[in-house]
Amino acid sequence: MARKRNLVQTLGYTRTSSETNVGADKDSEKRQRAAIERFAKHGGFAVVAWFSDPAVSGADPIETRPGFSALLDRIENNGVRTVIVEDASRFARDLVAQELGVLMLIRRGMRVITASGDDLTEATDPSRIMMRQIAGSFAQYEKARLVRKLREARERSGKLGGRKSYAEAKPETVALAKQLRGQGKSWAKISKALFAQGHATARRKPYVRSAVRAMLGCR
Image 1 (cartoon, rainbow, N blue to C red):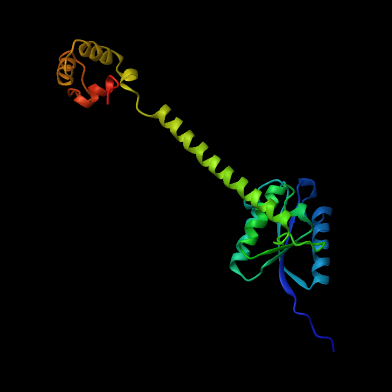
Image 2 (cartoon, one colour):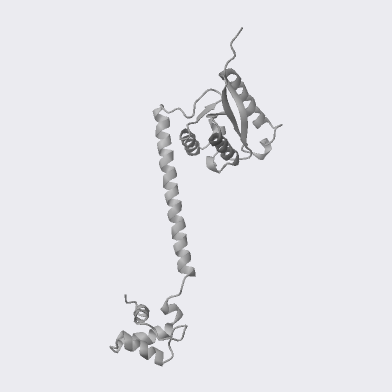
């Protein structure tokens, strides 16, 4: 009596890039599933769950895909450590996106195998190692660039929506303060003179010395 093989549990992943190829009766997804199931049958695997990203571009980042995000959740919740795809382009057509996705799975102890038997997570090929390093560096650069861009946007927003300068809000007050300073008056005397001529804070109080200094651009 032949001994029954212990099948390795695996997940199947499909991706279609066009709305015209979406649906169980469409050629693209059917073809992908058939290729994955055929490889699994002959390779000693059992597909225990399917995940799909219909009408998703192969250049889209792996982590933004709903189907692939669900696959990652499944990986983190059980012991399945293998994913089978039809070919590398189904995983990601863009090389950088592909290698970043592979890195993501390698860090989770995963294997990604194509229906032709190519192990995309193979870690001894020098060219693949180089590409993953480049992809990782590129992702780090993009993240740093985005952080800087958001910070600069916040700073611009703060300047546009923040408090106006004395020169913008109180031009007459600033002009008089400059005139008084030109006469050699001290900060305290300038404050008193401004108040005497009706130049006061919103609370109708005399300007403090630091405010007078700020009007004239002094620190």
